[in-house]
Image 1 (spheres, rainbow, N blue to C red):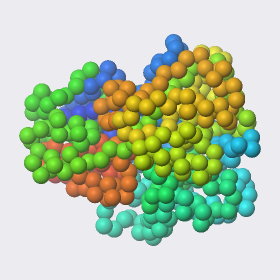
Image 2: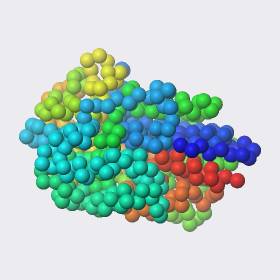
Image 3: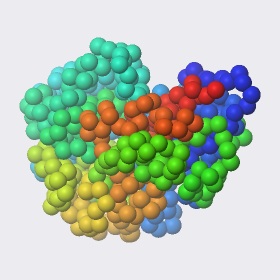
Image 4: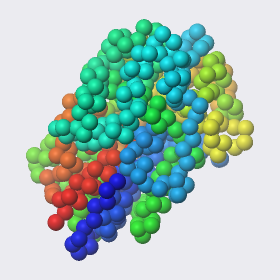
Length: 478
């Protein structure tokens, strides 16, 4: 990555929030030789990228995401020597598995040749769909993990992506694949988007994450997601910068004056913190920002591995628990209309299968979540566990302890998770194109910038929102 160097007298910057985007922004600013202060409201840096004992002593659980294809494939993170600061990626044998009611599972294999063999008659179609993006991952992410611009760096590649991504996930699966198993596999990947699978653009997440699986895998960090944060903080420390934890910022007036302020917060927090520094018209635009669905998440301490009927699930870092494509589509449709499915689509991971440091010897950890309406207080625990039991009879007998998070619980531990929204805002096509931050992260105040997942390119542990926001802020610094 090109470093930005300033020739003028030393400048100062404040970064509010120490999630992956806030830390990425701080690193870019530090590389440009600014004096940087980072403020974090929680006792531990990282935002969603934290690892905590949430159930029993010795059981290490990821508060947010546990599997990180976009972190491993991030152009900015890949440019940093994070391995020198303790970050080690572990690749499960298969990125994902999708159990079905016949007692078998279809797996998402990392190698495209193996994936084609796994999918039988649909193998050639799967390869045609994903190979252009997986084989050119660096070119692909140069555009997809970049703010929207009139002409992409790789227009033909992005045109190919756009022609597929504009379709609904159900339409793309039905037109591209014959086998119900392949359709279910794609639906599970696409459902990471939080969009109804009948909505336009709902296939985009499936294309992006599927390509990532074949290009960089869906790895887990040894020791948990907190190791990503520790590595970023370790790199930042070489510039003499440490994160000031337990330091909430309720107003900019609480901070020393600085030349730049970058905010790893959502629009709601930005209005509260910045207040009168923003123009009335810009504040009104921010107030119209729409948050996405929430999640109901459960962390488990287990006495033994999950007893899947399909042994293939034990090879996978992620298990999509949802049955057929039609079932998954129905679950996501219900959620998008404020209803609760009896058979919710559940995303599940069991990191201790591949990282023994996560639990005491012989024991295991797992987490699972399903999508629910934003801010809901509905208890999905029984329905979520019934889905796991459906494909892993005896699962409940393995549970030593559980910690359930409703949306309000998640927001209490990370103010950016408004209503349990873990991706920084509704991810439909309209808002992705016309977020209130379309002006390259700038606000109506020239020295204040937004750098959270509510800005392009959106949610995911990749740091690219912070990277691009800091770069843009530096380009305008006088």
